[in-house]
Length: 170
Ligand code: ADP
Picture (cartoon, rainbow, N blue to C red):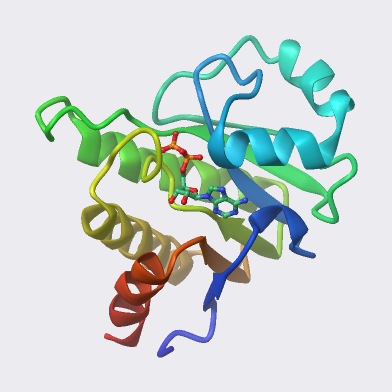
């Protein structure tokens, strides 16, 4: 790992002891499957109660809540694009997810932030292209900002781990 402020972990993002984790949410922000369902289950029902008051979130944007029963103090909910072959602005929308999440982390003086692979599950974004966007947008943000001090990419599968490892070793 060349950049001391970046880390790669294989595991369950809901268990991490960090200041904030990012959720791959949907536009309703009211919970769903995948990592979203796991986060809502682990955080408990008070999370949904807070999310109801947020009135959803547009694709490419992000909103912050408390972490409730998670070790993480905050959850940054961002809505990734559904992959439609790359013709519907998916790349810039995904880049915007990382930019807006990192900006919210900065505003809240979050030191440690963990990202799952936004849009790479049910939303079908090709994993290699998504990881390239995740790493390049994060590096660009960290070069200009003190917060967050550290960003952790969390993956579930070995193939995703390899994709990130290669990018982070470059
Ligand atoms: P999306 O709808 O944005 O595609 P998903 O939740 O379906 O979101 O998947 C996003 C990514 O999160 C996938 O790469 C999936 O393997 C991964 N994932 C699912 N559950 C967890 C978890 N508990 N911790 C970390 N990553 C997870």
